[in-house]
Length: 239
Image 1 (cartoon, rainbow, N blue to C red):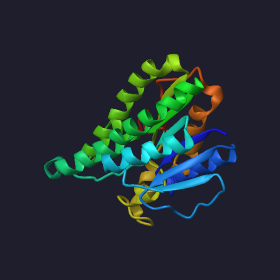
Image 2: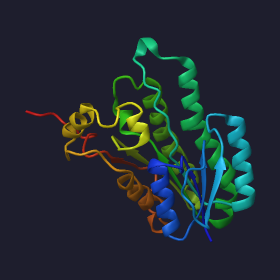
Image 3: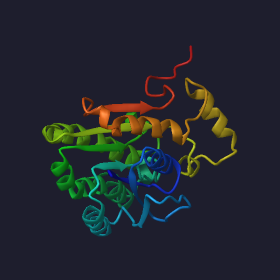
């Protein structure tokens, strides 16, 4: 039975991805700050702070030994918004660890199993914010870093049968979104009306895109970025 790592699997997009993988018959290891309430015989919870590189490396090594995952879905993310004059370097460093270093450590740990299988899928969940968004210095910079890593890894790992792709969502109705835009506030509807499709995205919208890249049949697609953003990556100019 194949196994997959899903970071941030306790809630939101990560939970939707975990549910989709479980429905497809995959064994899932969810890494999060807390286990959440999703339960399944093939679901394993690992409590870890992915911004702590030492703890992440330890968890990655243990998971690689016990489950030998050939799929890595790195979804965990934190926004930490601030205008440029208020950006804190400690926030930038924490998001480098969470968004970039964790992806490196988890993928490195899983590479031996991928090489042995001649197969692997890596999907990094970035953000539409990589195209620019006020107050997102640390978030957009580190999420943009995922695009460069994915394109580089796609070239390096293609001969091994491993594909690497990126899903860039936004804005999606999750706790992360509502940590910045309060649920029920007039701003929610204003944002929705500014999206070309006139609604916020749902976690399931993103999970479907992740599952496309993670599918065994998607072996001829690598190094790509798919925006799941209701058209906001194209532009929303109203004339």
